[in-house]
Image 1 (cartoon, helix red, strand yellow):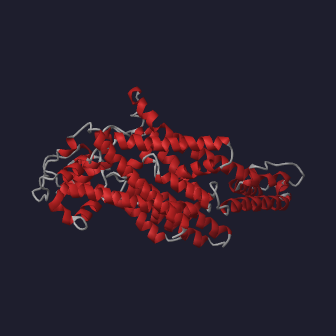
Image 2: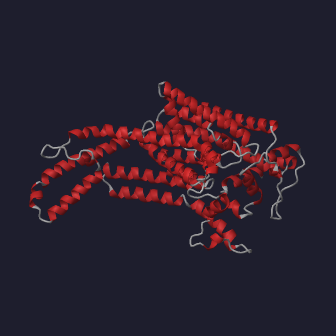
Image 3: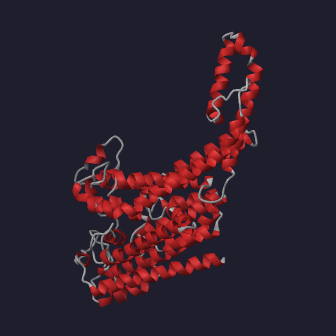
Length: 495
C-alpha cells in the first residue's frame, strides 16, 4: 500500500470514529425527538427469532435505529412483509442478516437479536466506508493521474457532508464501495470483475443500474480506436455489442428484484391485487416512490418545501459548478486544437467554414452532397471533384487529429475519462432537483467523484479566491457533519 493510500486509510478510520463519537455524545446529551424506534412488534412470520430486550446495552443499540434504518433492520429480521418495504433493495438487509447469524451470533443471548442486527449494520457500513475511501483514492489517481488532487479529493470524501449516513444503517456505504470499486476495475481493464461489482451495486440502490453508461462510454472509445487506428469494422462492432451486452445485463439485478416483488404481491397475494399489478408494464418501484413518498417530476416544488431546497442548495451548487467547470475546461482544450484550423482554406484561397469543417459529421455531409451532384451529371462540380476531395480529405484528417488529441489527453480534470462521470453527475443532479425529495440530494450525490475532484482542483489552485472557496467548502462539510450527527441521530429531519 502506498503512502497516500495509508494516509487515506487512517483518515477514513478517524472520520468514522469521529462520527460515532458525535452520535453517542448527542444521544447522551439530548433525548431523541421520537422514541418509537424501540417499539418493534414481532415479525408477521411465526418463524421469527426475535426475543424481548432485557439488557440496557441492547436497548440503547436498538433505540439508535432511526428513520430508514428501521426498514433495513426490519427487513433483515423479518423479510419483506409489507408492500412499501420493497422500496429498499436487498443487499444491505441480506448482508446484515448474514453477519448477525455468523460473526455476531454469540452476542444474541447477551443483547438480543434485534440489537445484534443493528450492531451488524453499524459495523458493516463503517467498514464498507473505509474500504470505499481507499478505492476512491485509487479511482481518482487512475482517472486524474494527479496524486495531489486525488489525495485532496479523498480527504474531502472522508469528511463529506453526508457522513452521518455512511456511519448509520443506510445503503450509502455499500453503494459507494461497490460503485467505486467497480469503476476502478472497469477503467483498469477488468471488465468481468467490474461487471460483477457494479451488478452487486445495483442491488444496493436503484440508481446502481445507471452505471451501464460507463460500459457504453468505454465501448465507444474502443470502437473509435478500432476504426481509426486499426481500420477494423469488426473490432468496432465487437466492442459495441459487448458494451451493449454489459449495459443491459446491469439492469438484471434490479429487474429481478422487481419481479420478486411482483410475484409476492401480485401472484401469491390472497387479499386482492394492488393497482399497479394490472398495469401493462408493472412498475413496483415507481409506484412505491409515488404512492408512499410522493416522488414525481416537479411534485416537490411547493412553497412549504423551500427550507428543504435551501438545505440541499450547497451540494447542488457544487454539483452544477463541477459540470460547468468541466465544460469550460473542455471548451478551452478543444479551442486550442481548433486554432490550427485558421490556416485551412478552400482551393481558391478563401476561408470556408473552418470551425464546422473540423467536425467529421459535416465532412461526411459534404461527401454525400458531392456524390449526389456527380450522379446527377453536374459536370461543373465534377471538374472540381479531385480538388474538393483533396481539401476535404485534409480537413477530415485534421478533425481526426483533433479527436485523437482530445481522447489521448488523459490527465487532470479535463481528461476525457472524466466525461462519463460528468454525465452521470449531471443526470443525478437533474433527478435530485426535479424528481426526488430535494433534501435527499446531499446523500444522493455524495458518492459522485467529480464533486470532490472539482473541489480539490479549486482548493489547490493558487490565489486568494481558491483559499476562500476552500474555506467555504470545508465549513460546509464540517457544519453538516455536526448538524447531521445531532439532528439525524436524535430522530429530527435531516436531508
